[in-house]
Amino acid sequence: MEHTYCFIPMWALLLDALIGDPNSKYHPVVGIGKVISFYENLLYMRSDTPKKKVMYGGITVCMTLLTVVIIATILIYIASLIATWASYIVQVLLVYISISPRSLAEAGYRIATLLKNNDIEQARVRVGWIVGRRTDELDESEITRATIETIAENTVDGIVSPLLFFAVFGPVGAIFYRAANTLDSMIGYKNERYIFFGRIAAKFDDLTNYIPARISFILLVIAAYICGFDYKQAWKLGLRDAHKHPSPNGGYAEAPVAGALHIRLGGYNQYFDTVTFREYMGEAQETMRGIHIYRTIRLMYTASILAGILSIIIACGVVSL
Image (cartoon, rainbow, N blue to C red; front, side):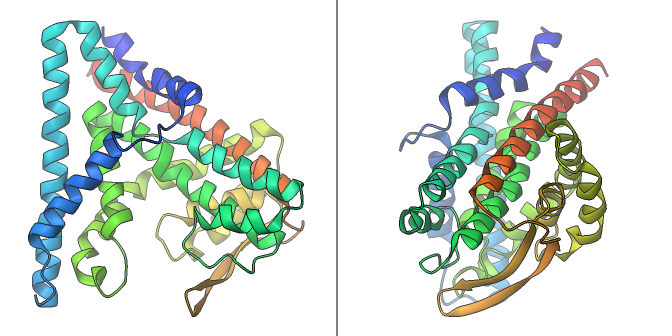
């Protein structure tokens, strides 16, 4: 049973490849969102001082993570009372719902296909579904950039991080990570409502992704070699530019992708009426086009397989201790 346990990531990746991320109101991640909303509605008070908002935001993080861990543990326990195979299935499902390579790929494929068909207007709409910046005036190059940045950055929190959390902490660790990441995506914003209340959620997400992001860097360089892209430049420019990203982790996925594909990421983005500038990563040796989205998806899937293999190796080592 110990050896079959180690192969849970393989089954989770296979399920994701076959089924994808079900778009349903009954999806467990939707349930995690409802847990977060419950504690937020309970603890958020507009009239609170910034210090209190930080404190109650921290309590929201702790209570959400505790609730999710307890529910996941109970589900595994109940399944184990039925049969060993039932427990195994639940554990596979917990890891499966924590990863999302197919949904990333599908979003990228749709946008790349629209660009291939010269349907810029619909491509702008589609990319607006996956990024927060304004997209109504973007050209093909900027639509491509936004898509590639999203796929690259989400390779960390949508694939590598949950698989590594499984490897070290088991299936409950994977869903723990997904809850932490969902907290950041829901309340980890620097706007009026969440600048204080969501601060701990954002910082905790940075912490959980710190090591996985740097492992992702290495996996993406290896993936560039396997895919026949410029792995030497992925390594060189990745080391040079990864720290330039405003996130402490995002650049460790985006920079090697930029280097591998001979493109330049970063630049000017508009959020509502505010224009911001992100430092450039990579070199603009090629003009970004839809074809670069397809290449990014190849890198993402190859890195996903490598992350799966790595998580199996680590899990086997942890189990044998």
